[in-house]
Image (cartoon, rainbow, N blue to C red):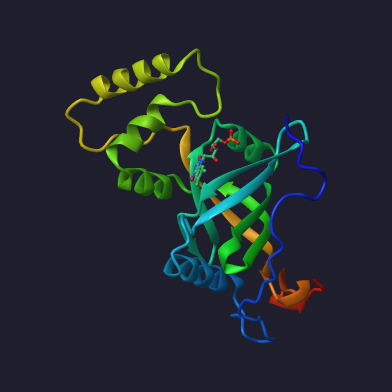
Length: 217
Ligand SMILES: Cc1cc2nc3c(=O)[nH]c(=O)nc-3n(C[C@H](O)[C@H](O)[C@H](O)COP(=O)(O)O)c2cc1C
């Protein structure tokens, strides 16, 4: 039985991280996201590009999961998945997303609100072709988020795909698999500070470009 009480978990940490003084962040939040991913990587964070993506299911209920950020440019953030998965179907019905990069050991967090749309097929093709063959086979074999009778049945599907594409180095991309591009509208950079007096800087996209403001912790 779980019996930890309402406040028994975790030591209380006092964060003392790099301050977000006014003006230290890039005026372009996409550049700043990229810089923080690099800094998390350099600091040895495991999967520094992992982000928690929340979507709205077709029935209006929220759903979250981790995905990997695979690219970032002026257009936004790229990740890849199965368009027929729960998140894929959710995004095709409701493109609004909320994203969190949780870098706990860095005392840093980025929150993003935006909209996601499928990438151009050529973008998905190029990324799919760059994946290891085993991952390409898995993408063909797995209808992500759908139920299956057993692990054995899944492994039999993998053998079937292996036989189908025997001798081919690179598999074609399954049509139901590809990228999404998240176009951010709002980006918040959070840095933990002493006594919970944290720094929060929020960027919002306006018709004149990005505007930033400080939020109370
Ligand atoms: C560290 C980590 C990275 C992941 N990266 C991806 C990813 O890039 N794409 C993906 O489809 N699933 C990824 N997953 C699996 C998802 O979290 C999730 O289980 C899967 O996509 C099905 O989600 P859905 O049923 O909500 O669509 C990752 C999981 C973890 C823990």
